[in-house]
Length: 251
Image 1 (cartoon, rainbow, N blue to C red):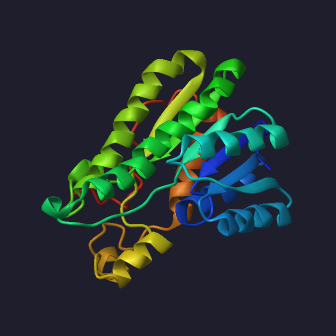
Image 2 (cartoon, rainbow, N blue to C red):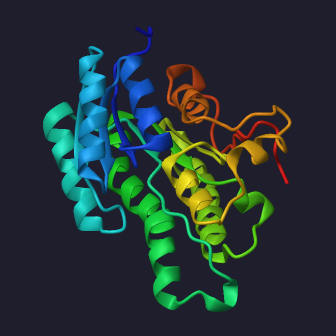
């Protein structure tokens, strides 16, 4: 158990992949964790794992693109654990379509989940942080927003927006004791990556690993370790930063 104070933490996309790893590590650190995910079963499974390890957690359904859904889930967290002090926004969807073929519907869906979902989640919880004079916000963006990527204009734009939004949050709320930082991962072994490989949208992860300076594929726990530190008491002087956790791969 960490010497850090036990805080109330929400992790969106907490039912699998990076979000699940973040939720589990926050739980192991002694925080009370709410894993929020569109996949309710996944969120509940992660929460059950945290509880089985001796922590406190709940798993809830959320559609981050729907503000009503977000506010409902946040309200449930407050009822169970109290005001929200930590937010990690890991909910996101991938997409790969040639730019000229991206429909308005697909554009809005990707922006809605990845960028508007980050906005919805943050705006819903930040009054708690303001009232308490303490908060930690960590957004999960993408290295593709730094480098660009073919056939992913909507995804790259959404994650670039997440980086920019995070910097804006840091300037606005850091004077109130609320830090905001973003982690743009490179290729991480997650269900989302596996789906992209199976669909022929990404090379095999083993091949990508050999292109990475550390010569391995990233794991969800790699991202979670950085996120949990950024959520800690010790990270109070770190805000507005883009913390690359990418094995040295910056294209």
